[in-house]
Image 1: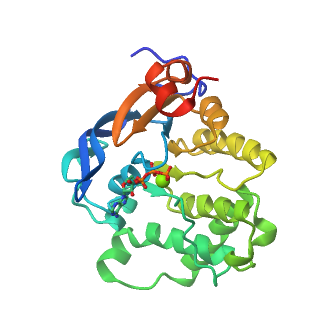
Image 2: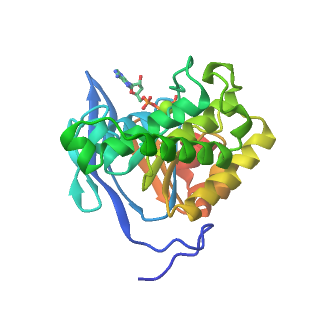
Length: 266
Ligand SMILES: Nc1ncnc2c1ncn2[C@@H]1O[C@H](COP(=O)(O)OP(=O)(O)OP(=O)(O)O)[C@@H](O)[C@H]1O
Ligand SMILES: [Mg+2]
């Protein structure tokens, strides 16, 4: 297989997630319409398109929050539609939410620990015997959660209630919680929304760093076009639920259909 020349030099094409004619209707509206694509292991895969194009719906399908009307999703060779969200999470697909979903009354640390518990619960013994984790396990969990907070630059906010964190910090906390699952894929839904230019730049570097450090595959929904173009190996473009383009940033940027539907002519 020929390695692709991309932003992420470690990227080497081997499929990890595949959507086949994936479709989801809400009443008469087809929010995701026969969408097919392959995401490769260790790739940073962008998903862009106008408001209401179906991007978040696609994430909701991949993570099992909603079921497709038709079509298939294959993760590491297995069909994953009909699995419950926690089963999909346990298989190694984590996400963040466009509308941040943290436990506001809990500390940053506790929010990450909750993400980690999904991982622990997927362990054979706890799953079968339904026993609480041993104190030593709790300590390890706490230690790991603190490491993750440090990684996202929030170690000094560990004991702050999530609701008291700035918008940018809450988005980083969501990433730490997703990482706590020790996933193989992370779906990031508009992680730069509400961040200032410095935070966006930091986020971009950070996403590339975790992709390499944890051998992660990342699917990124983002409206900040320079960030997407600078970061992603390939980009899929949705418009009214349909995939209208898929290619590397240069190909997508110059695609007339994408310029008309989303990017504009500048
Ligand atoms: N649960 C639902 N019930 C009914 N319609 C829905 C539901 N979820 C999404 N939709 C509709 O599906 C379409 C796609 O929505 P979606 O949230 O996936 O868009 P998006 O690409 O993420 O947009 P944005 O960039 O604004 O976040 C929209 O028309 C939306 O109103
Ligand atoms: Mg959305």
